[in-house]
Image (tube, rainbow, N blue to C red):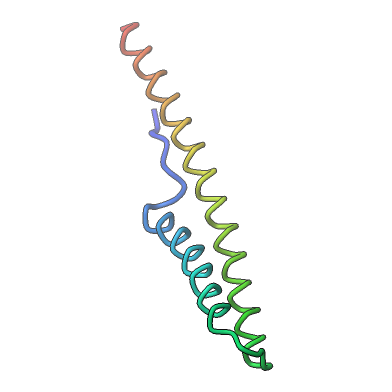
Length: 87
């Protein structure tokens, strides 16, 4: 019987959370230091908003995948325990 593998490595999980929180932090720092917006600053805000959006999507995907993986691994362990008891 083949053992189920997690879809996301711990490094990818950590990176998704880091990307989201780094984007939020950078955006907050930019808003705090904002006096008047010039064209290059508008580009900075657009880039940071894209980073936050990607981080949010990655964080949601990783959280959902990890929860599904935990359920599948628990089900596989239950089935294995039942087959071991039947023997």
